[in-house]
Length: 291
Image 1 (cartoon, helix red, strand yellow):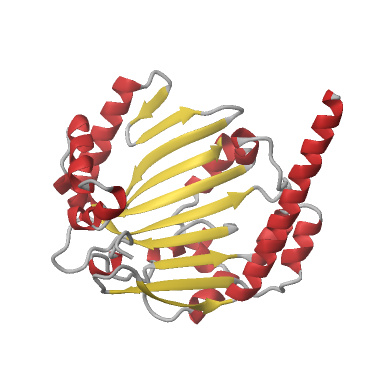
Image 2 (cartoon, helix red, strand yellow; image 1 turned 180 degrees about the horizontal axis):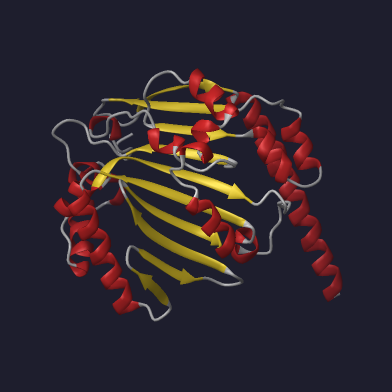
């Protein structure tokens, strides 16, 4: 397809070491390669989306960065070769499938994004410029050296902070998010020290562009009702799926490998059905109150 970004020509595979540094307790993690292929830059990666966006994406990004006082070259020097995303839920609070909205979904939950960085000076420059811009444009921003935070509704928070080799971005329940972020990179509290994750990593076949890990038992432990049974019935083995892209100017040529992907798709379908049913029942109940 002409609209499909030829990412395999501009991005190289990675071993997703950043994912292993995420704190223990993640229900789901994503590892994404940001490693530019030899001779390629962030501008080239953005250019792969030109046909999809219908405009020069690198030029648009450069214009946006200029408003902050940055250039694409600054981002290219600062940005490392991967990003890791962890989704967490406080195990003391069950997760319903039909939340009332964003605030309810975030309550007792947290999402943590770790962007690997490559150059300390460039990292400091980019974070400092973004922080200065946000201070000028947001009255609700709380800024401290190396960190930014903004309150969301109902005790939730959006935050960013700079660490050696990483920029962390998080959203979720303020207290729980702080606990999760504080454990990032601590070896004994990392995913790498979790037996189920170590088992899944051992089954991974080489480097890849995208890696998905699902801790089935942890997910079953926080889900309520029949949804928990759907995941619990899958057993203790975790799910890890890797996607590797091949260099191609035609679009996406990929190889999918891993363990437990078929089973998790079945359980996810069951969760979707349960969620739709709960939504329909709630809508019916609301309609009956209006009659």
